[in-house]
Every structure is written in structure tokens, then in C-alpha cells.
Image 1 (cartoon, one colour):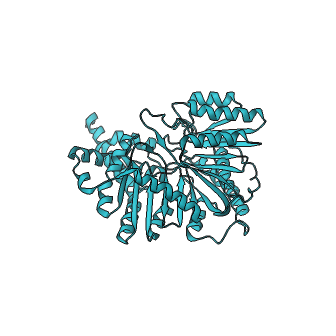
Image 2: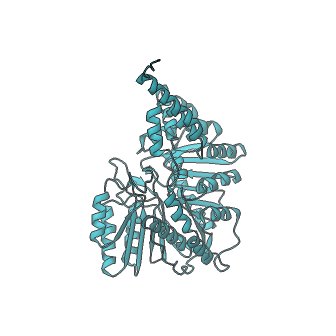
Image 3: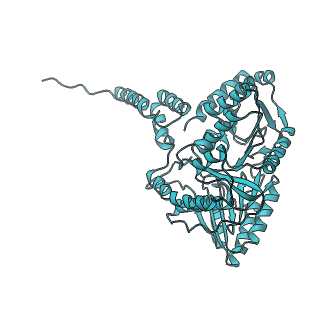
Length: 469
């Protein structure tokens, strides 16, 4: 009778590694960008066990089924808001950009708005506090970072005063973005009588979500009549030692505020399971600005802002200015920028010389050589962390909001972008952007290529890691 020799542990381990590698070839490319697929496959082929564990933890760029089902149930709610907004009194015939944004984010462009741009950090907080102090029936805040520092407590105190007047106050913040202050701010808000929820709470069991899929929106709605959209969190401007943030916020009045309110109410409904209240009346016209809110994220069928941005860069005929603190584009964005320059369009990218995310900055720097060779102007903003995110194209479209021009904002984070179509609002954004350019140092290709070889290698490694989506 033949005796079977036991299989050596080393052989079993080697076989397991090859099973993981071969399985990755079939599974990893599904519903992922080519860059992300390449990065995951490279990691798994070199480190099969560790790569598999990391892939199981953060490799699926989609929300779980229960959350997708809740979002699907909200489609009639968005449709009702859009129908109320989409009447002949408040809108003109949509241009192609507004029509596409409406398809991507479910909300139409509307006329009759007043837009006030605020690029003074403390002034934006002061204006928000003043609006909360004047609130009569509701305050709804959706924010990535809410700190219990001196700046955050200014807002908490205003919310407390509002609650004492009988105003309903609700706050949703991101627990990962706010992790340093999470417990303190929850206690402070609860003590003030505010209803508090965390966006995308991370759970190991039950209804799990990826820890790195975040709600990055910054939307504030007061009395369903005043709205704020932009890049600014509720935290001190120098919350990182040695780094002072520079932001851009739009204070809005007019019909477009209904879109902000709809997104905030939808996010609250998804996290709590409560159906949103019926949409309030559309705010009365307050000015001449034409605006549209474009929400985006993994809930939506397409990468909303990226889809619009790539198409609009391809449509550009004279000038594109992109301002973002974090620039990690995919091939579509890079191709659109290079092609635009080849067609004679002036394309300028403004990023921050002050660094707060070292790995992201290293990956970002790996793109500069390609951009400079193509003729894109790369400008490093001095003195502040330019955390503002805004874009202008040909004097016919301006965009500002929470979304960076990076893979995370395009594919993982819940974001909100405000589109501006009227000449006055676009000119105001361009004026601020020209101030950024004046406060920046422009990169020179020869000087950039003279950086140490070791630095170039580290940048390219960081670029590979940045694609692990």
C-alpha cells in the first residue's frame, strides 16, 4: 500500500501565493481604472498575502448594497426637487455643460441667485456664525472636519443660541476627517442640543463601508434660504502646526439653495434610514447669477466632476485655470490637458508650495515633468496651503467646491461642486485665480529636471501607491 507523503508547508504557501496571483488577474480589473488595476496587480504579484488582505479591506471602490439601495430610493426625491427648480420662471434653456451636469448629479441649473465669494478664512466663519444667529427655523451643516477648537466652538455656540430660540439644528461630520476632535465635538454639539450624525461611520461587522471612502462635502444650509458651498471646514485655519489654510467659499441665496438642501437631506437620510422631509418651497430669486450644484461620489453612476471636467477641457478654446491642493489625475485628465495645449489653449495649474500630505505631494510631483513638456503652466502658490478648489474655462464656466483634481475625489469621496455660468460670477472667480497666479512661483522644466535622482524615484513609487483604489 502506497503511503502519501505530506505536503511541505513551504509548498502549500507557494501554491497559495500563485492561486492569489492568478485569481487577481481575473478579479482586480473588474470595474477599476487601468491605473488602479495595474497598481493592485503589481502589489499582489510582489506581496500576494499582504496585497490580498489590503485588497479585501480597501480594494472595492463601491458602497455596500444596503447603501446603494437607500440612495436608489432617493431618486424620486431628487426628481421632485429638480421638477420644482426646472420651470420657465427660473431657468433659461440649458447649455450642454449644464445639461450634462444635470444628468450626472440630478439637479438643474437655475437663474435668480446671488453669489458672494469669500476667500478670507476667518470672515467665512464669522459670516456663517452671523447667519446661524439670524436663523429662524433650521440650520443643517454637512462638513468633513468639525473641530472642538476655538473656531469650531464659535459655531457650536451659535448653534446653542439657535437651539435656545427653538431652531432645529442638525450636524453631520465625517468621523475620519474629524478623528482628532471626534469625541469632543460630539459632546459639545450634544450639549448644545444639536442632532448629530457621523457620515460613513466605519464598522468592522454588519453594514461595513470602506474606511477610506469619505464624505468630503462642505455644505451649510440655513432656513432653506441661505447656503454655503466650497472647500472650508469648521476648524482653525492653522490646525496643522506651521500650515495656514487658504480657502474659497460661496455664500448663496436664491433657488440654487434648494439643491444644497436636497443633498444635505439625502445624506442625512442615507445615514439614518429616515426618509427626507418633503422639499421646502424653492427660495425666491435673489440676484442675477446662474448656478448649479453637482454632487458626485460612489453613489452616482458616473464620476460626475471628472466626466464634466474632461469634456469641458476638450471643449476649451482659449484658457483653462485649475486650482487644487492635490493633483493626482488619471489618463483622461492628463490627456485632455495636453490636447488642449496642443490646440492652442493656455492651461495653467495652480497647486500649493506648502505641503501637508507628504505622500500625496510626492505622487503629485511625478506628473509635473509630463505637464511641463506638454506646455502646461505649473504654478506653486507661496506662503499658505492653498486648499481652495476651483476651475475656470474660457470665461463661460467656473467651478468651485470640495473636490480635488485627484483619483480620490473623482472615484471615492462624496463631493459637491458649484457650477457658475453667468459672466459676473465667473469673472469674480477668475479675479481670485489671477491673485493666486500672482502669488505663485512658476516651475521651469530645466530647473525641475535638475532635482536629485533619488527624489524622482521616490515620486514615481508614490505615484504607483496613489492608484491603489
